[in-house]
Length: 249
Ligand code: ADP
Ligand code: MG
Image (tube, rainbow, N blue to C red; front, side, top):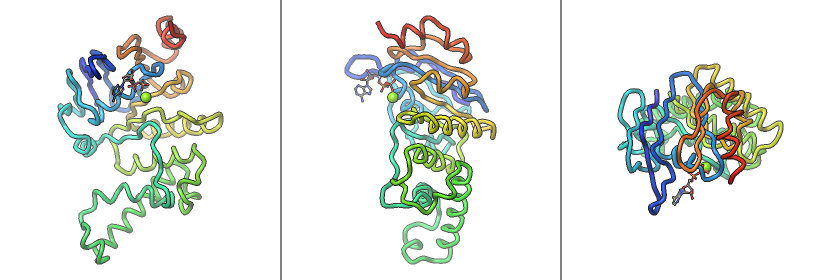
């Protein structure tokens, strides 16, 4: 589904990502882990199109995408939850999900402003889809509450609901568990497992090896911008190179 080949990106002459290759097969959860500064978010942004690669190729569903803008990659089926993404304040949970979907309606600003029948019909459809996504992530009973009052774990679930509404082929998550503790991490992990069981393909960026162990089919380890190990989670956990990267010099 996704093939990243020999991708590099430098900032001020220093490589953040260097000659990285990575494949994600349909239906799998591929995790990219590594210590802080390893280049995980840079790699993520190269895949989504929010950063341009200096070198290398990125193919998605058999199409070369490395020169496409982020919204065009999104339209092909990439859906993103950014690291540290925030909810919109002053909106309910349901409105937070709906606002992301208005971009794809056809009725446009004028019929929205005039509240024409076509607009009202689309509004109902969007509402139904938002409700389905909220049910999928277990937020139905929260849907009328102000989004910024949700506990942080539920705010992450809300970000997932927003991403699901785009009906992604590939879901890209950058450190979805950061800042979550104990049972919140557990709940998020269970949710990602459910999405995987639904057949969704997921590229999961994560700092913490423990979090990905039960979720990922395959783990790719980055350190100093390069892939230092790749394999099933159980092997990766024992890899001396990986342990050394996490323990530091
Ligand atoms: P990670 O997500 O693994 O913590 P990043 O991809 O954020 O790592 O960063 C990798 C390296 O690239 C770091 O040394 C970071 O300082 C550098 N870097 C990332 N983004 C930029 C940027 N926009 N400008 C300059 N340096 C950057
Ligand atoms: Mg990061």
